[in-house]
Amino acid sequence: MTVKAMLKALHEGQRIILAQREGQDGQVDVDYLSIQRGSWVRTQLNCWSSQDVGLGTCRCQSHPAWRELRVSRKEVLGHLQTLAREEAKDAAERATETAWLETAIAECPD
Image (cartoon, rainbow, N blue to C red; front, side, top):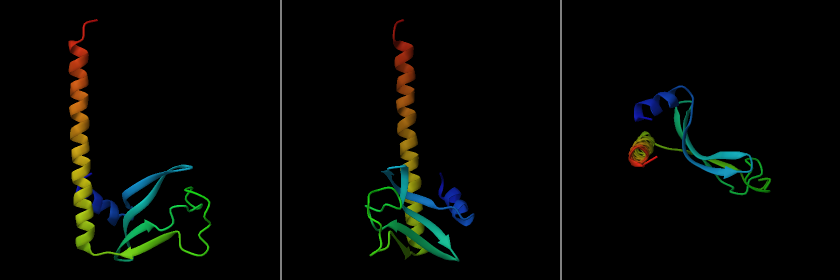
């Protein structure tokens, strides 16, 4: 996804996921960016054993399961640019492997 596409998604109320972890019920977004009431917000999982998100048995009654940090536009753009570079690199590596596989299949005798 391009930086422009990510900015549009944020503008439409979506969040941009920076990190996920495997939980009991599948993938859990543990770090993400959003815009809320005109402020850039980075939300991060605060309790890695939170029962609420399927990562353990902690009921998070003496502490919050999540923390929200106001971040600057510059920080958001930096995260988006890094994410876009990583996604482009991953796509290129996958294309290289697919091309190699197709060549290997074509060169193998029946």
